[in-house]
Image 1 (cartoon, one colour):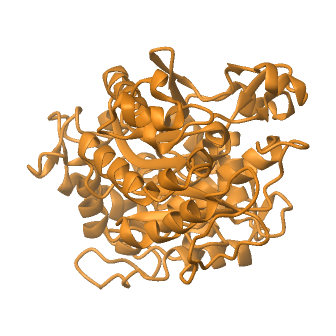
Image 2: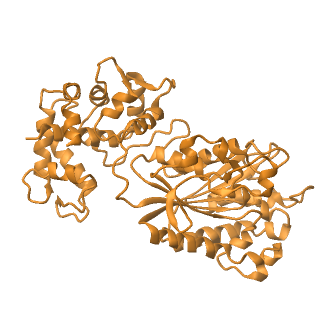
Image 3: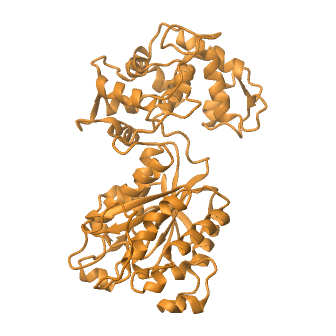
Length: 472
């Protein structure tokens, strides 16, 4: 039996269900987000102030621009107004921080951004039942239907890659705060826009996350607000703010992000680099919270209902000991990167960073245990059944069952090469009888053999056996 192979499979599944595994994202649909709105969605962030990894992007966080999917990065040349506040290269919006934060939260997925936005626009310019006469109430009939242009871009993105639309982000409102008659229609217009996007994408419960800018004078709770005209540039602001507040209750699966004290360019309404990065993180946190995958502080995702780690009876101590190669009760980024299922040191650094509470770049047993318990707080304990080994050593039957749940797409009880989510080499090694399928019996036998094997992961790593098997 190939015990080296089983070690790799067991540990990779375990890490996937805790915090770390990146998995094989390239062969799965892109998790795509639609972004739309006005100037702060367009963005006034300064690309020269970003670290290289955000300026250049990578293949796991993508954007659809110029008719193709490409690494997410600032690409819009600074305009005259932006140059006046110091931008010299490219501008960017909340998509940079949002996209990369989502990639950290979903380490085994490719994240995609489909953004179409235009500065100064009213929601009238975005109406699904757009008419030039209606848009001209705010002097924007010349733009044409922005909703139509947005959805055309979404359809082009669909043709470019296999995508799954998972969220709709909206940052807009200032364009409707200048005229009371327009502001009073904001709530209904926003609701019709969200409904139309959901219908067009075929996702009836598509999460909708939107921003609501507030100054210090406006409270969070606007339940009792009776809008009235105010002095200044935005006399009808209270109707829009009230509509945004009410929309969270009236639009199912929606989440409002209150944007208060966001850093801006001097004497300007536009968020600067720090402001855009902060807003992007706030939107990512709000989205994850709205779909129940994180709390407001830790960023640790709740384990799925069919959690493989719990199904196999794997404990925090069992996983930690297999990562802690030198047995010093500390897991370093280097140790994490050497574990099967990780894709290099940068991925391991991201994984460690998510639960490294003291920020020292490594994980103590206390940090790992706390994160493991938080992630699996709602999991049901593994029940003893045929194939169960000692506590923490796993359940062969459940291991095979979970593998089939993740890979057997047609439900025929076996996995062929087209269904397998790993590499060709991995498939060939798991297909023990070489019949062109991975079957539950093969997996169960391999898994239990590994769990009963006295030779530990630590010995295999130190001897180089794991690296040899992985590199073959």
